[in-house]
Image (tube, rainbow, N blue to C red):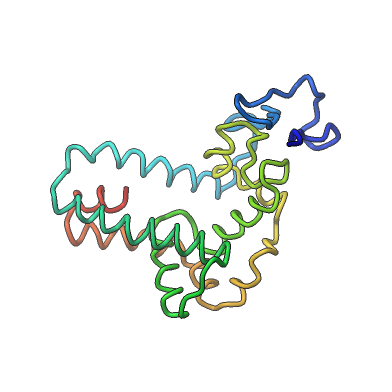
Length: 213
């Protein structure tokens, strides 16, 4: 298999000696992308980091707010949002067209995915399709070439990186044509926040913690 090495003439600069090989892999890493300091943080980056931090802080309260009712809320919520919403809908159905469902069921599962707080369908599917098209290369939306942390989570806080590469998201025209998905894109945060409010109103802080995290 051919090594995946960033061209020396690209925007990262440097020479081959600047690259390091990931252990047990054929991917060469530049290690030059600034994760936190030394780069411009856009408003959307700050929002993403704040949302990410909020969930992790909320998770600290899980051991102290445990009830069996809250546990089952988390379990059922995972089945609906994680398995049906993200794995089946966002990933297998919308990104890869691995199956076909009646529209009402497709939209229902896609809405479950919105409640998983991983982004609206247009955003998620676009990122994933570009990832598979340019997997492990410099054009990958979360390329390991920029380092392990960037490929794992750092890209999520660097919207400028995504906008520079794919400003128009031209690979999701099938979703953009549908009013439902455009609506979810415009109102995504309302649904995520609304889910948290409903959980708190239903079962208090325990349901908020276990249901959202």
